[in-house]
Each structure stands twice: as C-alpha cells, then as structure tokens.
Image (cartoon, rainbow, N blue to C red):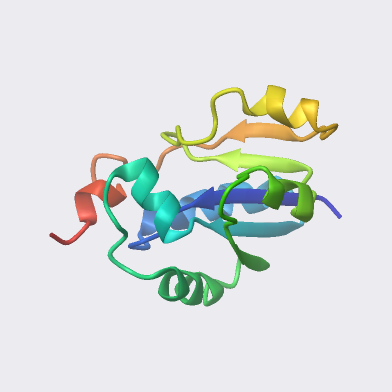
Length: 134
C-alpha cells in the first residue's frame, strides 16, 4: 500500500483544500493528513488559527477521501513523518513552512520519500488567507 502524507493548518476548509486532498490521494492508496498544532500555526503565520486543533481535526475526519487524520507534533516536525512512514509527501503549491531542505533532512534520517508539489486550485479565490474571518 502506497501512503501519501500532507500537512497544513486547514483552518477554514475550502475547495482548494479538497483539490489538494484529491491530488494527493491520486498519488497513492492511503491519505494521511497531519494537522498543525496551534503553536506551530502561530509560529509560522504569526497568528492563532480561527478554529482549535480539535475542531480542525474533527472537520477533516468528515472528509471521506482522507484515510487518517493525525495531529502534528510539537518540537521535531519530522518525527511525525518517521512515525507515519509515507511513501510520498504532497506539498501545497504555496507551502513554505518546514519545506526548505526537506529532502536532505529526510535523507539524513534514512528516509527515502518522494516529495511532490501539488497544483493550486483557483488561488485568487480559494486561499485561506483570503477567507479567514477577522
């Protein structure tokens, strides 16, 4: 079974997220979605998510295409990848957090994981920063 892993905040689910999940699922048989902790979101985006970690995970669990939803880990961001053992990591088209040097960091840990940059879906309309309530 080929496992695909994607990560993100997924604060306000929108068609762009659904496109991301569909693209990722096409790459394998089992889709794992890692939901970023509130502290990680704050560190990366400079603001807390609108919804709590539990609320975001609960909403993701309702999406049938997703096979497993897991919570991100504090500290070592690659630890969850080691635990889930994906064959492929799908990155969002604009995902920058924790992606620089990712290939090299995975290789250092003895992990051979294919990294795929997924395509955007109407980014001028469906982008979390555009949809976030104030």
